[in-house]
Image (tube, rainbow, N blue to C red; front, top):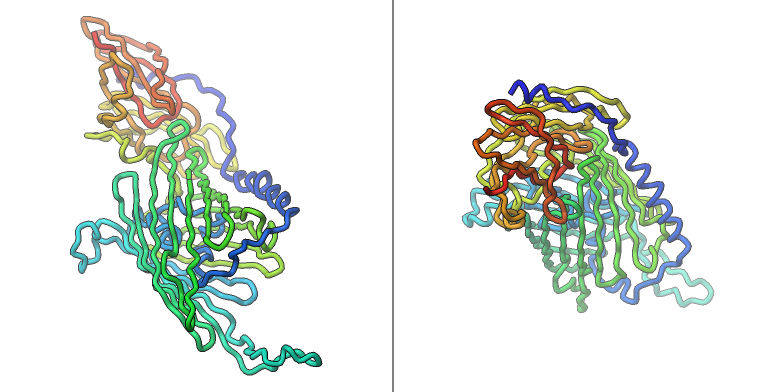
Length: 522
């Protein structure tokens, strides 16, 4: 192993990358701002069914984090407010959470939201094993008007001399929706969920109520060179409508679909949504969340309605930030509504359970669970770190890892991180799933399959694998493969050293979800 540890490849010039500090400005400057200006020249077209549904408050976004990303949240899982956007997103939420949002809406309107989530296995009164495996959520959505709205009968409005009805007191209006949601991991990559809602509306001394149902699904998959994406779809507000006096008014039935992706190189979360309410034209939303440090995130988004936004192009813009502490998180969102005013949302969330160090919201596990190695054993690599470059985005380190028991005893790569360099990282060795094994080139005998499981920071550029092969009487040709979007690519192996017992090789390959060490059958 001494020979292996002595192998060091000459350092190459690090590639230039956009640091996380620049993602939000670039996103705003080159995407959202030009989009808003270009759309502002078009007058909005009113949908023929506009205003025909009841319970319009159900269409108002929930949670400061989601709203600051333009409402592009159908495919973003693991957030308590998934009970409002797509209940399937609750499936991956762990621990108990209590969350509260205050929405300082325009024209003195207000909204309060409460969410409480808990894993089903902690609810002792549940008897069904299936119901215990998922995550439950209770949600309360309360929307209210000012208390001093003037009541006028309208009986004098036809008077040609003084067509003004006198004030006959004050009244108020408020809406309430109570939700019971459940998210369940149908399999390793698919989440399903639903939410039952009780809806009540009160205007002065008249009120009406009804029930509704939300259903949703999420699916994780690899795309574009093995990158992990999550797709989501949901249908909201299925129900008979709210009955006032003798007439029943339909609910704002909405169909939603979305796609999200966490960029491994920067940790940025990109999300895209399409939604179609029954009483309006389709909406398209684009959102970005960029983690600047372990505790701070900036967010921005834009929501555009086909045929133009009713309150002007800038009414589709949103921005905000989030701060994560040990157990508490704070989020803020700003959204303008043209001449109507602005909206300010403040969210606070408390996580119950054991203490843990706040983590970047990045995807370390880069493959869906159905493509993970089976019968895997973990190899811990002891790390020697060397600082290469300091930038506003963090410190770039070269990591040299050693694990004598691994089929790749040495790994080297560069990472970008704002924290201290890691003391170790983990690589899994196991068997390829059957569907991936069937795609390997013929005539190969697999010796080992590897996956990077726990690598801190953001990997920069290529990875250097140093392999060892025991020498035999008959020479064996070793092959090193890595997975791509189109199948398997063969990495170039360079012989570095030999002795009476072992031969050592080196391969410099791109980041990938799967690596295979194989040999041609004799």
